[in-house]
Each structure stands twice: as structure tokens, then as C-alpha cells.
Length: 105
Image 1 (tube, helix red, strand yellow):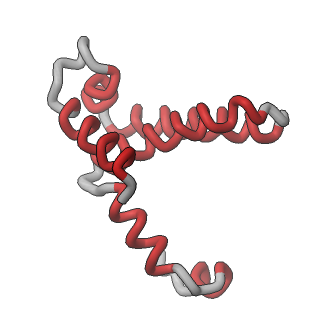
Image 2: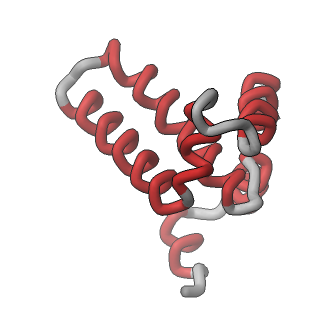
């Protein structure tokens, strides 16, 4: 994985058990997965709004917030960005419609 994402994930893991009054990340973990998922959704909407409004200057910062909150959710679920990378690698070379049709659940 990219060193920036490795460091981000390591920081998130380290802050998971920090006092929630000293770390935003720790406060998300303390509030639980529903709050983490809510924040992820909010950041996704903000990214979409930036993209649709033509505010190119805001897309990257919003995407960074989105990826941060996704990483928090993954860590909370006992997963990692490497798990997502592995899934993308598994899908590589498979057409989107074929891949989607092969999903279960």
C-alpha cells in the first residue's frame, strides 16, 4: 500500500484507544460504528456536492475527508485499506457488469 495510507491507518489504529477528549478519531470510535458510518456518509455527500457544483478546488479536500472516514470505518470493522486493495485487485480485468452479476447477497 502507499506509505501515506499506511501511516494514516497506523495513526487511526493508535488513536482508537486514546482518550476521546483529546482525539477526534478516538471520539469517533467512542461514539460507535453508527456515528462513524454517518460521518462517512456526510463526507460522501460533501464530495458529491463539490463535484456536481463544479467546485474543483473542494473535490480533493472532500475526497481526503471521505477516505479518512472510510479508513476509520474499516479499522472499526477489523479490516484495512489493504483488504480493499485486495478486492480491487481481485476485480481487475473483470468487466463491471460481469463482476456485479457474480456477487452474492
